[in-house]
Length: 356
Image (cartoon, rainbow, N blue to C red):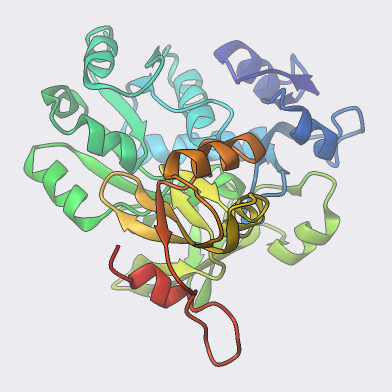
C-alpha cells in the first residue's frame, strides 16, 4: 500500500486504474499500528483503505474498491450533474476523497480551500473556479460559517453531509438561495449514497429498524477485522449503526444505536472523552453527552463533579493531548452529582436535555 498524508488526484488516479498501489491516506502511527500496511490486503480489487475511528474510537480501515468508488461518483453525477469541484474537506476522509474521484471521472481539476473555513478564504477559492458548473461538498459547521457569503449562491449544488443538519440551518441556507442537497452515507458506502432522502441510482435502502444499504457502492469490509466485517457486511449489503424509516419513499434517519457524538462532521466517542477527563486529578465523576448545536450539529459537553479547580480551557487541553482537539469538550458543566437511572447508570438523556 502507498502511505500518504492525504489523497491527491495523482495517487487516487493510480489506485483506481491499477497503475499504482492501493492507497492508505494517513501517516498517523496509531492508525498504522492497527491497520498494518505491510501485510497483504484482503482483496486484490481494493483501491483505497479509508481510515476511520468508527463509533468506538478504535481505528478501522474501510476497504473500498475502484468499482465502488466509480459507481458512487457516477451515481452522484447522474443526480447533480458534473462540474468543477471546490475541495473543502480533508482527502483522508471519504467525502474529500470522493471529490477527487468525481473530478477524475469528469476530467476536471478541483480548486482547494486551504486552511480554516472562513468567508474570505472561501470567496477567494470560489473566484478561482473556471468551469461553467460549480460544485462543493461541506459539513454543517462549514455551511453555518459561510452563510453570510453570497458566493454560496454561485454553486449548482452544495452537498451537505457528515452530520445531521439542523432544520434551522437548512431553512436559512435555502432562503438565501443556496442549492443545498442533504446527503446520508458513510465510509462504508463510499460516502453519501442517499440524497435529499432518496437513494442514488443503484442503491437500495431498507429501514425496518437499523438502516441497511445495498448496492455497488458498498465496501468490501474492514481491514484485518473479519469479525467486524461479518457483523456489518453481507455481500453488497451494509448494516449501519443508525435507525431510520422510509416515509413516502424517503429515508428519515431517527438516530444511532450507540451514543456517538457527531460534531463538525467528525465522530467522537463519549466513553473515550470520559476516560481522558477522569484521569485529571480535579475530576471526581464525569459524563459526556452531545447537545444539539446550530454550528457544530452537536457539541461535546462534559458534565463533571469536581474535587479541585478545573476550567474549560484546562479540560479541553487535557483531552486534546490524549485524544484530539475534535474530542475536546466545548462546554463544561459542574454539578454536585450526576443524575442516575434506577439501574444506577448515568441518566444521559437528562444530562443532554438539562439547561446549561
